[in-house]
Length: 369
Image (cartoon, rainbow, N blue to C red; front, side):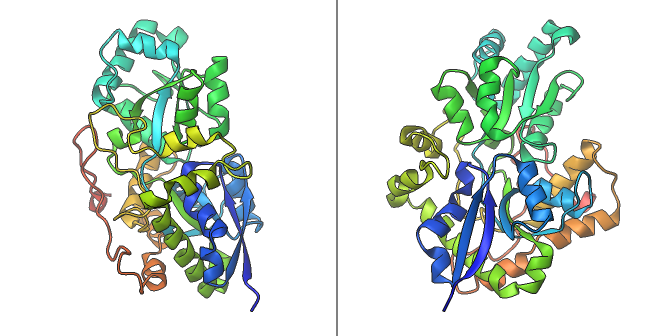
């Protein structure tokens, strides 16, 4: 029987591993599908290629999918999220010069609140004529919302007290090196690469802002999903099994070998290894919770989607109404997740509540929207 071919886009990041491994190690083949992987350099390109039908599924920023489903510009795109792609693996990295300046206001030990206070003091001293510039990977991204949440929590106004601009993940290291930006909020492996080549220092992980934070989803083009429900379930099964494989320490060396290949991350194995290290950016202050498949990492959480939606409101990207909330709820598909993984005892069964483990001690209540 010929396997059904499914075109899947990805960005060269550590959290694309489940999709890559599903293809490389035969998890897709086992369920009767062929994942044809397409590497892209920017999230905008991934979004556009889903919108025009070039991709059936993709490694995708959850907020881009939400924005597209809400019809926000520049290109509306209807996507569903039947699977989440892990937690953690994002950080804020600053240039050596900025790190040196921040250190004058206190020890840089990974404490989000104290580091934010140092940034605020430095920004005030520097003044409006020389604002700190921080890059994020997309306006509709977890990175943008984590960064802005952190800045506001520390008394800084995004795009007023500091400049926030957008760059593709793979350009962050070069932008730090050239001095175009002072800092960035980006996913792995780019924080590790910046540290390795001496152009950046990670000062806060997004786990320090929101413990076990969500980020990417397996985005599936809605029209295609409605026409091919069986293939969607098969894709979910294969990527879930791959995510479990990625989380097993005995498979780490092989995972590093796969991800480092030119067609994927195209990086030296030592840098990929460091990106996967449980303590890669930590300062002894918190326990890292980055993972591919442990509890809560694969479940398509509506509450996570509503947190991102709330951040869109806070960032004046849209206005709130009940129709928008329903669109977010409709985009996340735990029903497909449960059906596809009914035979897996280790799949999440219920909604994982958004933890109150934000750095400022606040809790998010979706019912308050």
